[in-house]
Image (cartoon, rainbow, N blue to C red; front, side, top):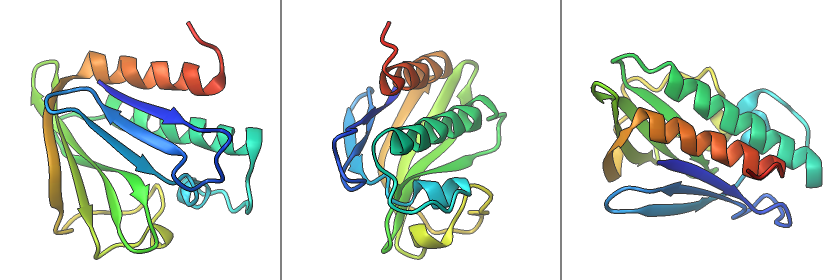
Length: 153
């Protein structure tokens, strides 16, 4: 399962956590700082509910990317830093299962990419690898959206 946890009291640095519930598990703390630019919004100094809405739009973007995977690998940026980019390289593993890798590259910068960027040919360094159920991944992302929006189930 993949989940995102959000700290609304943070300042857009170290305020978003990607949690991979697999073996081995992983929790990656990242910034939401460049998410507006990544999503095509150019608002500066987002705080409170505005930043929460940006994070919700980002989790929806991740959900759409995962749902659209059909045998061709997709890179989904998660850690947008001014010094590197890290994220999930996701592909179909077998029926109902996804191959998920956490990868990063210092050949890219979070300030130079957006949600339409092409990542073909990037030399990724791998940090983790899992085989996860597509249903569980999408369920975890839906849980993330409900939790971040404040409508717990």
